[in-house]
Length: 565
Length: 69
Image 1 (cartoon, one colour):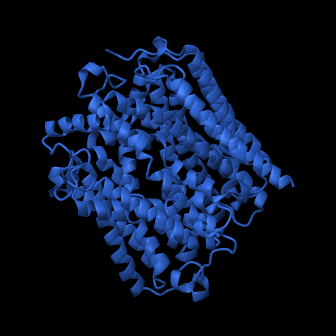
Image 2 (cartoon, helix red, strand yellow):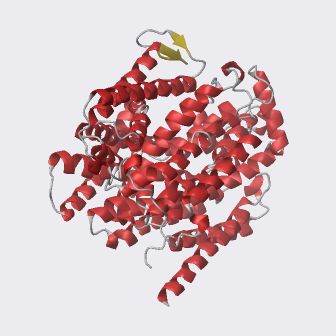
Image 3 (cartoon, rainbow over the protein chains, first blue to last red):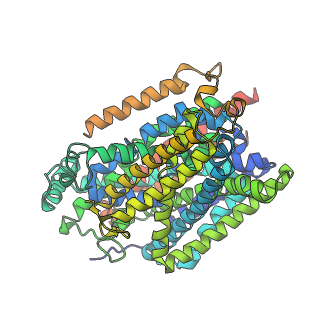
């Protein structure tokens, strides 16, 4: 049985109204876009609750939503790791320890921090890698959205692709970063409103929480695991063979929890940019902490639907099927659940929520790209010392340019799948060691530019070599397959651990062997020991103090960890 | 305050909420809700969205008042 549904005028009306608002927000903010700072950095004027929600919404792109749904079906509660150990410590660290250097220094971007702290070549390496990565990420997102609309609604692929690109372009071009951030907040609420009813209906359908537990027990035992293997996070991580993710606690803790999570949340300009747009130092520090609160509960709307789908697929009488014909394509779980359960009306809202998540992911990449392009590539290497107006125009041009390249990328993705896989692998190698560079840069004043640059390159190389020497799910091992991991996830966590270690050690060794070219005065505000302790601005109430929020966030995450153990 | 984000969010949620509520009330109990196990999700989500949107609008207008004074 295939799902039969069709959109009606109510569904189309909901979508149309949403698009009108998205574009309207860009239009309303247009009058503020008078300087490069306003356009690219949001004028450092946005309250913390907004940047906080944008902080997690920019990360909640549709690929994330679909991937987490798929992961929920494949690994169950283990997916929650991405929202606790894989996010919360990193977000707390960013807010408490790293934000003072990003916000307090004159840096306007993460690569620019590297330039101030280390040297030009370290910045260049990071800026170019990041710029290419964001354009590709937004292209892949666009491709996935158009593909989904084609499969789900039989819309024209090219039309969906161009239309989504134009909408994102218009609102980021008109209102810059501020418009992207405002829309991310709107999109965040919309995603929750569109997905939450799905969870309620779905849970009802499988017989409530107890019913879900029971059916997932059958799924687990069917695959040779303990019946409750889908319902726990840490319980079965003593041995990689006893949990569906195929990873042991150390790899989870160090690989995901430390290297990957801190690397992503603390150094990825896409998210850090949101915090840097906040209206004060304490607001910037609060941004990731405020974001962490809803972050811990997002799995309810993205992971639980995947788990429900896994249970449904075990009950043929429910008639649940993945849309698109390929029953192994778990990325289709969330869209399939939408069309399975939602009547017209909610169907429109659900599809709007999916589009919203695509757009927030895309706009996040576009706004991070235009800033890095303008400040770290154009202003640094192409045309220095021009007027602010000039850089505002460059920023606007970069927005168009970024979207156009993304469209091209989307078409490359549609015809050469392997190239995209290859590129994503390269980006993973480049990103894996990054946190070591920032950690040493911020907390060890002796770290030098040469140390950072060569350390970063070695870390990237170490990641590539590790990937070349190990195999998992048929991937890797292109040098010589010496070791086999039980899952691709385990392989990527360990790749990150090796990359981080290599970068950390080599940065230290090379730093000690080379001369520190920066004076103490240069490093003030960039390195922990040379920066005066920051105090919260007077008038910040106690419950808005970053330290208090950090304790609250930490405590909730510990309670959740124990509950989901 | 032309750039208070609560205004557009509140308006969008109220408008979409109204559409869903009215549509849900008109179609309630019909064939349409077979897929959602008989639950009138349009009505309930719509009401939820109106409450959320209304709350945002209220906060936006209260702020407007205080800044005007």
